[in-house]
Image (cartoon, rainbow, N blue to C red):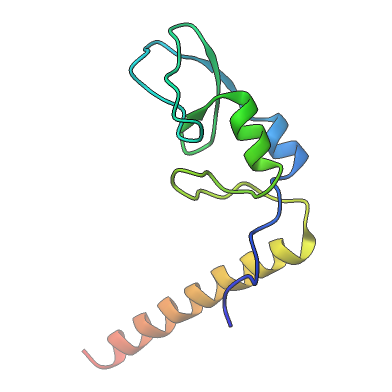
Length: 108
């Protein structure tokens, strides 16, 4: 059907352990999970998409599913089936784009 039948699996242990700690320089931003404001100087975990979260919030989240709760940017998982599914989905999109490009070059 083109969609994974359930919530994507947890983020890989390696991806989670690689998330950098960042020091918050403002108290005007809040954690998108718990909605509490960060304190100046407080450490937060930063996702590859640059969204920052309280460590306890994002680690609990990533233990359940692999994507940023704010923008859905996906981290790798340790689930081979899901990773194969993602690759195939990406290939299908690429094939569609290739066919469209070919069609446009032939008929325009």
